[in-house]
Image 1 (cartoon, rainbow, N blue to C red):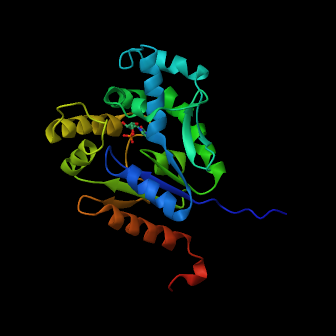
Image 2 (cartoon, rainbow, N blue to C red):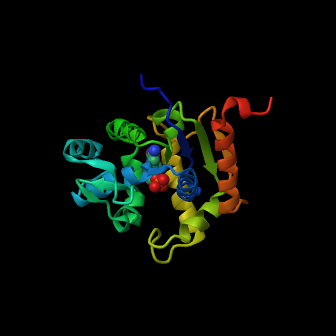
Length: 237
Ligand code: DC
């Protein structure tokens, strides 16, 4: 009889530009796992809604009506790396990371039908094996029994500086102040929506990375994961 083994799932939640992607990618690389970015899945829906000229903020029903004809899923590329596909083709990063998408994505991700549609699509990635998934509701809704849950934060100024340093993600002329205001607006919508609002799971490990380097953040996370996955007999009494 096949032995049932629980798959390892690492959930990384946190507000916009808190360093989740860098951390999740790094953790996946170190553990030999699959990195899944659920924010990109919401961004892909937003991109498709904008391509169709929908008024996202005022007509959420039109966004929901678009879903049955939309296929969004991670597929492994030739090297075994999960790549987000929209209707069979890789989602262009230049489109889904564009500021016009960033400006609307919080409205899309607050639509209950969109969230419901995402749950199964995100959970089924667990079939791949060891998953490192980042988002806003991974530890609370998608994988409530995740092996380890992190909630990554950083101060608003640090987050604005990090976002400004990412090419193509801010409009020309953007300043630390304007980016911080934009991030604060998104955080407010993400934290106050009725369905799956941004909040740490009760059992999440909260890490403030404001004063940590990427390497320090990664080392801390890997230490927690190793502690959570070590066989019991090797744990200290
Ligand atoms: O992580 P990000 O900034 O790329 O996410 C884009 C938006 O998607 C963000 O405003 C919140 C939303 N989101 C969400 O509501 N739930 C998730 N699991 C991931 C992202």
